[in-house]
Length: 100
Image (cartoon, rainbow, N blue to C red; front, side, top):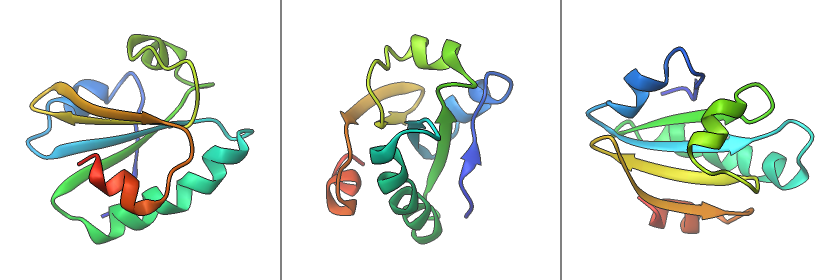
């Protein structure tokens, strides 16, 4: 499954997904974000049981603010419309998977 570009227009459908949601808050200029991005892509390709999305904080400052994202990359896990886990900073794949 491919990574979904999440924005304010599609966020409610993403948040209310029946699947667990893994959101990667990032910016194109962020070095650690560029390290995490291919890991998130890989997880998306391997796990059809979750919905994986990316939020560009420069393009979607309202979403970043709604989640109190003050440092990137930030990974947020949502289940049944509620945040159940989050992590800030570059992390290895195993650590990101453990958030699920």
